Amino acid sequence: MEQYFSIRQVADRLGVKWYRIKYAHMACLVPEPMRVGNQRLYCEQDIDRLSAHFSSKTGSRPIKQQSD
Picture 1: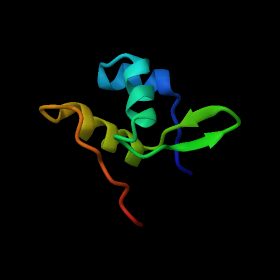
Picture 2: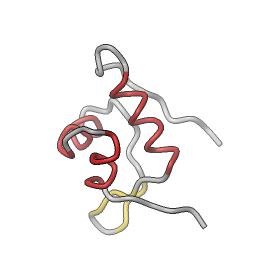
Picture 3: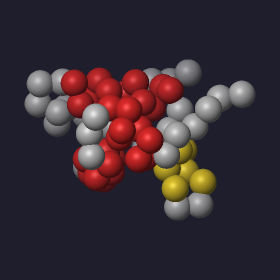
């Protein structure tokens, strides 16, 4: 069974503020994760995409979702 994390848990794990993750989604820089109700839930693949986004030099390059 896959484990899911909240936006604050992911932000703590990546060392960024939660609102930077939210902005990256709103600006279409990274794909939206699964939502349940009004809460984003992140799997490991989502966290890897966010990590790649925030580790890039500019942090503003869109990251496309990989097809499974």
